[in-house]
Length: 390
Image (cartoon, rainbow, N blue to C red; front, top):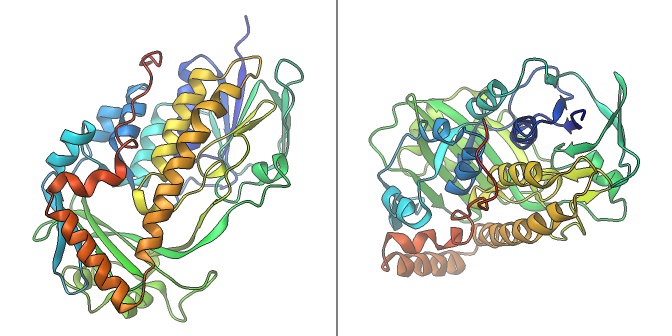
């Protein structure tokens, strides 16, 4: 029988994972990416144990684990440097079966690209129209400047502002500004002399995590109106907001070039979609369930989506089981992440002081207490039927 054909729209982490997973299950796969060059959006990415186990299905989990750079302790701090609560890599490993691995997004993209046959990804290709087709009936059709192709499956991994989602669900309100803007960068700096931390201020947050190869991933958020840009540059904006915070924040700001700082408004989708599919089109990752970054699960859930979709998708276009498996779980993760984002947005001094006391009390219960937000998330495992391929 001829191989079924899949077209993936978007070459981010989720789209590429779906391409690898489908190709290894004997689909003919083409990835269409509008960018002319694959330059990964974002500086770093957290790959939690749940996503590592999903990548194990593809034989790629160990390659990600090899990028782990830190296994000691870390925690939550105040802008003056006082520790509010602590946890350890060992506590995470004991609770979830492994630590969270922080790596450069570009390295994860390269790993996924290396698992695909040459020519699978077509850059500089903008999809202008998707006809969903029908399960058990007409194939889907994807139109771009290269022409129109038919496929038994289309995977829409085209991001937070997914044109495919908007076309398939025109009455859905779509994503909203989550009230936060995020900055991210990777600095070439020795990852020594400090412990990984998040520091919460008044409507502001800073995070510092070492990466392999003497690099450090830094991220920050602030409660600001959407669509803003610094009058000079975003590095200067970070210095204005965080330059007087505890070490090593000022030193890391001195270790990065202005053009290496990324700024993006954060969006999520308080109203979940009614389904993650229509006809022969499946939505994946941010196209299906954009979420705030506060649990580090956006990319992880996209990786889960991809492995589950490849396992459940059929050449006849049956995708209801994919929606059934993924919509409830991602809705839970997005809501939990939104609640953490709301905590970081507190700005009044009494509220911030009460928040610090709450976390300090939690810290007294031991390192595992700080990990409870990821219970039921980071401990996810692919069902036994999802056999490792490769």
